[in-house]
Image (cartoon, rainbow, N blue to C red):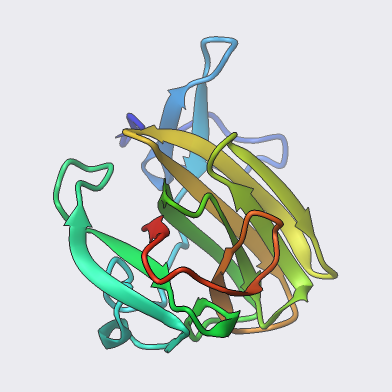
Amino acid sequence: MPRMGMGMPLVATAQSSAINVQDFFFDQLQGDSNLSPIHTASRTNSITNSEDFSSGAGGNLTNISVATNTVIAPNGTQTADTITPTTTNGIHTRTYSGSSNSATSVFAKANGYTKFRINTASSGNGFASFDLSNGTVATGGTFFSSASIEEAGNGFFRCSLVVIGGGNTPTIAIENAGGNVSFAGDGTSGIHF
């Protein structure tokens, strides 16, 4: 995803408050050949070493194993991790501590399993279920705000969920082919993150 930042002031908005372009990145060209701005001024990554899916990055692992730096990530470095559900019949998750207003974004690539979800505390609070085989997302929950999935190259997709209020435990849960989060894994199939 090509992005660029600029550092000159923009024209004032309708409310006459000036914004600086340096607060924005411009995402890849959209279908109408316009650049799509992404506001970046007040973003804070609340997860230390968020690229590390092992238990060393904080949070909890439930019925999964993590192999670090197993695959080439979208940025061209061998830093993508592989999450593999165990053969235990139950949920297969990676949880983090977060806030009740949060955006969770991850790059993911199928490796046997093709579906996973991001939720916050529970799917009832807000969730996005991503299908890496066809690039689609299903959403719901009381505090759900928005979600997206976009191709990132080499089989990876950038998947994101925004929730406003409710729940403060961002969770990544592997789903089986039927979209269930509780199942017995085969111990070898997984997803690269």
